[in-house]
Length: 342
Image (cartoon, rainbow, N blue to C red):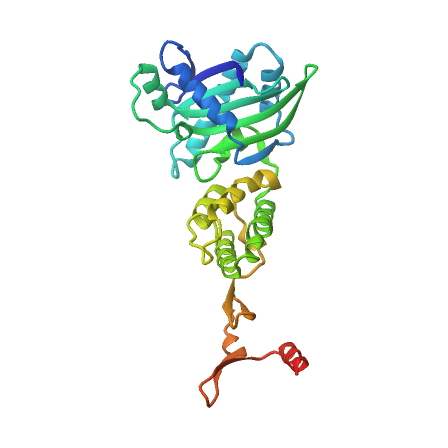
């Protein structure tokens, strides 16, 4: 990876201005900046976006940044836009949150002869000052220093460029709307409903269903825990799902390789084209929780856990005079099937 262009700009809310920060190679700044660029450029992003129809400002800035030589001026324009949008967001959301003070990083990274990445990121200013002073302490890991990022994958052939993908990353649990919507003029490529349905369908088909052939009990346990997670309000996060829902599960079948299953889940969004992080829409998940009762080695009873109060009228216990235990299930189809076995 080569980095033809880097610029750091302080977003100074106190004085309502943006200030270019020097990148001093004799101190720690160059390494600090390169560590950030490496971390961001290797990130596949959390959510994919498109430019909104009718909004041309950031689309124009990105075009000028790629094609024109005055990147310093364009970077300052972008930084001033970020300052304005952050001030507006702070006024609007003051009762909810405090906009983090930071520096904006703008960079052009050359990945191959024809593939580039444009990076616009906001990082922790206090960490920057620590690096600038030369007083390196045990600060945040590089990824935690980065609050938000925008990455555009660019292909340039014969001086003509195309944008193949635009993604964002946000250290917070949910994407800040002022960052992607107001500042970057972006809208999600997949909406939350489409993401919710696709994520569940792909996880069920490619992560959970293959478990069934090795261990039905483990399959149903993980199916139900996945369904509870997808049908709850809040943010879907593939890292949380893989590491917490799957990763902390203790399998009934000791041969089940949970680490391999987690790794496969983490790779799923990029391979199957849904976002790593989005707001769940539980209503689009129509599946119901199931209780699986093993009756014999060959027969199991599947019961949808939907709070049906009439279950006790359908399923009844029975014990004969010799103490043998049975269940009775009221079912015309089941009766017909049993009669066919006689």
